[in-house]
Length: 173
Image (cartoon, rainbow, N blue to C red):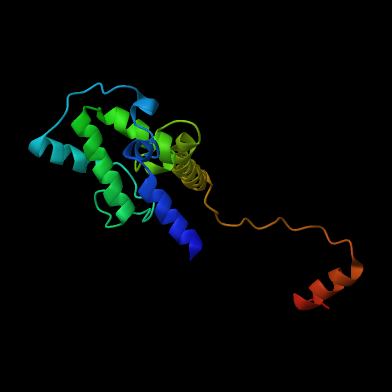
């Protein structure tokens, strides 16, 4: 109970200057000064939704920031809106979130490094499978069809017992 009272007293004593220092670092520290024009009105709303659709919600992980109802996604969307109002470009905003949350936050990962392998392996697997099927069918088509079996020429009988049995079967005595 005493620790809560002390925490509340400290918060009440903090000046706005101290609270400002506790804020999240400014985007300019990560991606530099804004390079675009500040947006307002309908264009701001449209661009905010477009950019929010390119960012993954860290809580839901299956939804974009625009589609997610999670509080974190709402905060991220508000941050995107604020950055657009200040004049940051789409590339700067995506880079800012990538530096803050890692490349996982991008719904469309970049085609480089390990991600390139993730994109290429399924295509290479399909090509390899298609090649195997193609060459297997080609080999089966070239295989000769089995023809009639030719009778072997009669062999001389060296065994006297077999010669006697053949004579008896053929009607000889």
